[in-house]
Length: 341
Image (cartoon, rainbow, N blue to C red; front, side, top):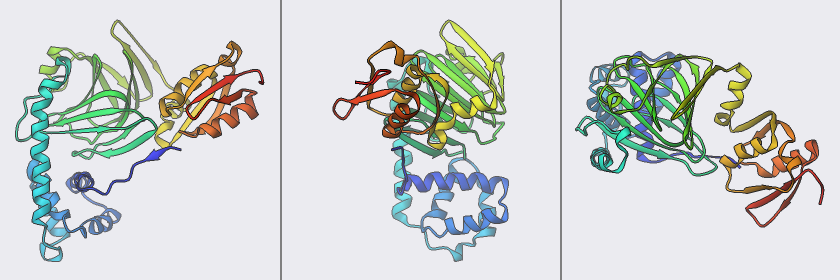
């Protein structure tokens, strides 16, 4: 079964507070005002918002906070929690310095300062995670993925180290949003797109807006705090694949877009795919190993919508609808064949 993580830690409150800070900055509608009042019932909510506003130089937002929720209407902030937040930020700063020595030069981080935070997010095989970054950007992290986030007052740096992530970028034209993956950097201001690493290949899908694609070399790293010049502009409804010596781009129709991003809804879709290709995609989401007994089975075309991680449901559908027979060997190995045993 697919696994979506629920969070009840201080870090969760930081992520929620960052999202509310972004919403306060652009203004709340009535429904959001009611939801915000509920959020502020948390005894550490005000202290967390104030910490973030000071960190990102958004003190003007606090004036809106006072209008909505006067201090007398709130519980006093916990000193213990404020100490926790300060400690987590100090730890992030220490991690920023350490990261300068741990990661490759072509993914060099900006110089660590008191205005910088670095956060690490990752998922195991079969795990999916939804994240809200400090600027309000929403990220969906696919199975077996790892993401490193580095924010300063001037630039938002995202390092996809493995797997796949979908970004709904908070609109901040003055602070570029860069996603580094292998030897490419994808830059957006306010848009929605996915980036996937598959060994040496990087795949980009642009759902909304425009993404600029650039080579991730030392010159690019020096210009990372500005809008990168001379990049290949990828518009909504396009897909690109990037290898060290070969690039390819093409339009992507709505049905194909839905198929490739269906993992965000906990599904996997096949539309006449070869079974061998379909199983390769399934294998990204489970530790179960599949083996083909005959070549005929590899080339059977399969179609349908399946739940991520539901191996039993997939096997029943393959047998009932596509005449693919299976045999379990232990708990983590399955044999597939177009002929019955």
